[in-house]
Image (cartoon, rainbow, N blue to C red; front, side, top):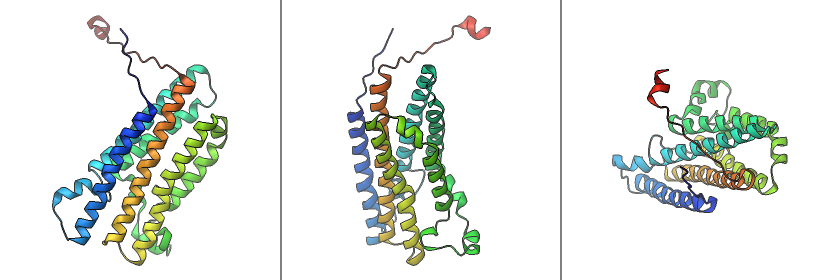
Length: 239
């Protein structure tokens, strides 16, 4: 028996965009309530884009994990085809698994060490010290995937670059701007809160573009993907 589940990249992207719009409005509202009206009820932390383990972070973690699943599907298909770049797809999938975990656990904040920042006399754009290894990682990844990008269809390549630019612009670029502002003014104010909202929304938008690109690529390059599930009977399990 076969079950056909049609997937439209455009509809998926539109549905996710509605969620992002909701989180954007909710996130801005939370910051205005906190710093404009000194409203501090606990429930608003569930929609605070500057916090972890809440609805926006769970959404981001899910979409990043969805990217990892799509990348894994493509990697498996490419390996079967004997494509020389299947490992690039596979490694990218693992990277997105890490991103998904980081969205919930904030693993990158391990690198934020106040004593090290003071010892290196860092501040301004490098106030959040993790952006330095983050920028190095982005540069090395870009170099490692340069030829990979060139072999992709033009539309997919352009969407990948667009998605990466938006995501990195939020995760790294806005983080550096937020760090500069935090170092000069502080973090407990409305302007900083709104800047964090911009950072998180850019990341979410970048992921939506990437999901659209992956689904479109699957539809264009891989066509139909046949997923089969085999349920072992009792005898097989006993053996």
